[in-house]
Amino acid sequence: MNGDWTLPLPMVLGHEAAGIVEEVGAGVANVKPGDHVIFSFRPQCGRCLYCSIGRSILCDGHQTARWMMLDGTCRLKRDGQDIFQMARIGTFAESVVCPAEMLVPVRKEMPWPQAALMGCCVPTGVGAVTRCAEVEAGASVVVIGCGGVGLNVVQGARLAGARLIIACDLLDNKLQYAREFGATHTINAGSQNVVDTVRGLTGGRGADYAFDAIGGEATTLQILDAIRPGGTAVIVGMAAMNVRAPITPYAMALQEKTLRGTMYGSVRPNLDFPRLVDLYLDGRLKIDQLVSRTYKLSEINEGFAALRSGQVARGVVVF
Image (tube, rainbow, N blue to C red; front, top):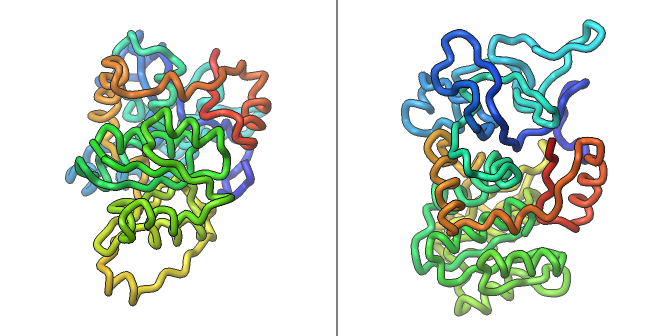
């Protein structure tokens, strides 16, 4: 919303969505007309090094720009000019043309607004805990930022069996959401010192794991300071491209702290999207509570305004 990532224009935005397959091209075998699908905004060629070792989110089998089709062309045009699609999908639209490998079929009883959120914030947050950090039962966890992704980090920690889940945000309504999603303690970062409070809740040591669901210099440094010696800090939120954080290598080595990043929760969409749908339909994954409001496409600017102000956990555009 702030223009922190440089992208070419004109472009259809939107990267978190679900829909029904209407037509498929020649040779497509993974989906068929009538399938209910969730979009993955990362392609999976199935042939590169990363796909072969189970790290398909890092797939480098396609060298075309991330706003064009895999063959380097655009399917959308206006007055002869190419119109790009965000993440090769561009889902703020009634219909989408995209590579078949970016679609994952799921159970048809999955409701649409909830299915849409399976395209990004749910797997990114839950996967950061279960796939990337592999948080174990009984662990202590800190989550900085309680937007859509952060709330799913919180519930990922709950699903993993963490005994202490500390959620931090500047807005009290977001902290209330966090309690509903499984936080055992909350910290208003505007009135409380996050690191001192975390240490007070963990016997002075710091947490086993800390997650930055915002992405920025200050929050990256906070998660490093909030973990105990031997702990793991995970960057989940996407910072602006030019953000740098001055860490202290001496302290990192002396205390054996780990700082790592995760893209898309390090999930494997073909495997994890259906599993997350199953968890939701079994009543174990909270997604209904994420959908604060639905919007028509003509109301999308209202949705952006609500998101910017922190009024909603997540808004969903429906057609």
